[in-house]
Amino acid sequence: MLKKIICFTLLFSTGISAFAQQKIGLLQAVEMALERNLTIKQAQFSEALSEETLKQSKNNRLPDLNANSQGSFNFGRSLDQSTYSFTNERIFTAYGSMTTQIVLFQGGQLRNQIIQNKILLDADKTNTAKVKNDLILNVITTYLSVLNNQDLVVASKQQADIAKLTLQRADISFKAGNQTLADLSQAKAQMSTAELNITDAQNAYDQSLLSLKQYLELTPQTDIEVEKPDISKITVNTLYNAEEVYKTALAVNPDVRLAELRRDAFLQGIKIAKGAYYPTLAMFASLGSNYSSIYQRIVGSSSTTRPIGVVDGTDQVVVAPVNEPRFVKPGIFGQLGDNFYQSIGIGLQVPIFTRFTTRTNVRKAKINFENAEVTAQLARNNLSKIIYQAVWDVRAAEKKYQSAIQTYNANKDAYNTIIERFNVGLVNSLDLNTSLTNLNKAQFDMIQAQYQLVFRSKVIDYYLGLPIAL
Image 1 (cartoon, helix red, strand yellow):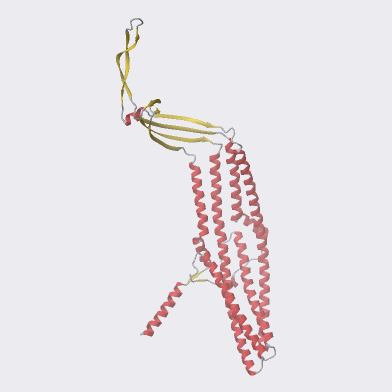
Image 2 (spheres, rainbow, N blue to C red; image 1 turned 135 degrees about the vertical axis):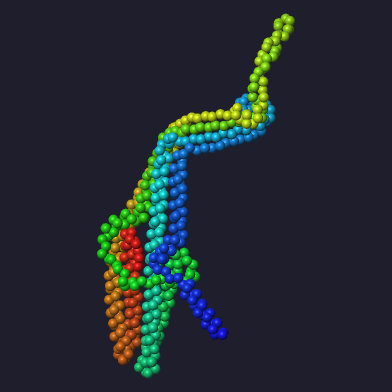
């Protein structure tokens, strides 16, 4: 019963391990990177911020609306806001108002700002596309590196098997007296070298796999396996015309497009800066009211007599009829109604002297534009250099791969001949080890040349804007 439990546990654990390992193809790796990569998310956040900035620049054409209110206790001599007369008593005053303003003309700055923000939004979108394209190329490069290192691990293990077999034969020959101790030591050294090659190849494979996981935003503990296509069946085109590739890349490459959009944004910035030379015309309106604790409303008048002087000599008081106003203290809402006011008008602000601020801003905007123009030209020049270099590299890679195939086949034939002669004692172990070393190096070179050729061709596809697949 215990044996059954142990067997079941082992089978279950193996099943979990096999299920946990994720097999990823190139297309899936690219999709995962585009979905999870944090650099892309940062670029998308910048794009979202630019979109909000554009919306706000459009909203700046709308009128604003503000409400203001204030209340205070006044002591001593103060101005009564309801009667606009000075009084020398303690009063409570409060007022409130609403104001609105709309800019009718501002030197075209509002319109030019909207245009500039549209260009900057397009630039951020292009930057997001650039980040995605760069990520795709990095994922493909790392994916090919994983495949390359994977093949090198297999090749190094195959070489270790050959070295092990050679060591066994050398040991048998040494015991039979057909070879010396030096021959046996050479075989042991070759075996140690083969094991070291396995370690180096495995380390390179692990490192490239870790880099791929980082691009996919996977933890280092995630167990993944890359799908291995038949690299020999991949069609590689090396007959490229560098000038035609450059012309195509110039229209689709996001690096150049990004530089040109930023240049256009700085050009629009010159117009915005020049707008400060013009006057600003705005329409405004306001309404409000106020309250005072000592405010009184006149509700009529009453007739009475009051002394207006005295007669000289008799000192007789002279009186005359007068009409005196009668006051009543209204409630809060009544007082607000009495003091309610409205206004509407147009304001014109003409810049006469601004300490050369506008002139300086215009000059700086022109310098920024000229610098952006140089940056755009540098992007075009750099793209041209990269394209021509990529075309030359893919041609050189093809020649190197064909040469590596011939070298490998020649070393393979040589090794097979030498091993046959070694088995009958016609060559020593030094010749055999030298031939095996040459074969190992030729196989490594052929594998690397093959993946290098594929990578160089995919770089051309990348700059042509073609979908990259294996």
